[in-house]
Length: 440
Ligand code: SF4
Ligand code: SF4
Image (tube, rainbow, N blue to C red):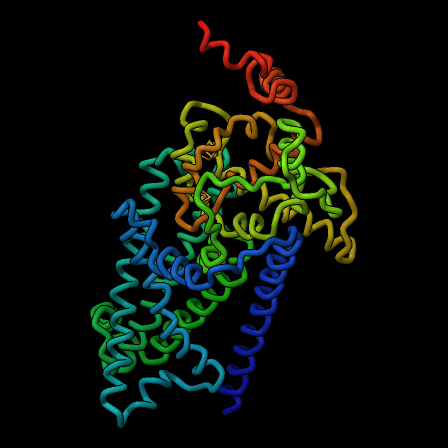
């Protein structure tokens, strides 16, 4: 009895401590996203729900590449279904029971059968996930898929991907340690197929040793799950949660639509035609044009950055990247996220208050002018992204700041801007001469 109470206390303290650390990580992510400018993405709720169900839950865009999609689907379904076993681990941990769900339904054969079926399904999916994880490691490390080996993937991003893959294998191994030793100790009573086969290897082992190994698997699986939870807020794997809100808050405007600034549109219209009918100038004209730092981007841009899976599908289709330019849309998202992390660290060190550190997203080791200039605004990255992220939206805002705030544009563009200003067109002709071609 005393041992059970001590075990339950250890369990509650362990889970409570890990959950608190995980909560702090998720809280920081939320606070970072809220550093962005306000933006309204609440229109057409029906369409938003549909987009979320199709893209996040149904993984619609993943199926452009069916094999990769199937592999991801195995991991995804396995992740969801394994939570059944986790529910039981939590019940047993808190109340000091053992296989609570199995014993609780002793007199309800249907529910007990359902439970045994669920655990068997988990075991089958776990084996498949183990195989898929090895396939992913093979693809990444031996096949060296180009999109996983771009410069921005060196160092921490590569390690992050490996940590999660090894963690998945650790979780699965512990499921089988736990179930197989349990099967051996209970002489096959639970009826788990795969663990039952493994359990034959433990025949002849004494009861207490079987129980100790079962407990190692039980605690190991729990530690893996809680470790995953604590790690999630610091990893690209946060997308398993954020893909849902991010696809709900998708941009519903047609691709290619560019958010014009009304103040600038008004000036241009008047420049082209002084008699043009324009809205009166708004009193709340923007304090600055475009974005220089994360504070100037919208919360949606920042949510995009945290949702990025670093899959590189955008970069693989980016014409600028394909032709050897420095630009990689994936890196734009990774840099935005890194800058948010840097800002949060500095705010934490300063009791939550932001003090300008003299840095911003452009240069300072983040996004270079060369990268920003390389974008053709083709939208291929937006089209490819499996979780509806728009690297282009960030690029456009940063580039707008470069040009309109810093007059930082190549000479060739400056000539075009001057022509637009003086001639109302990109060419070097006076507006009066526009129709001269007719006389030729
Ligand atoms: S919009 Fe820009 S970043 Fe995106 S794919 Fe096209 S060139 Fe690359
Ligand atoms: S922006 Fe989208 S496509 Fe590009 S790496 Fe991130 S998740 Fe993948």
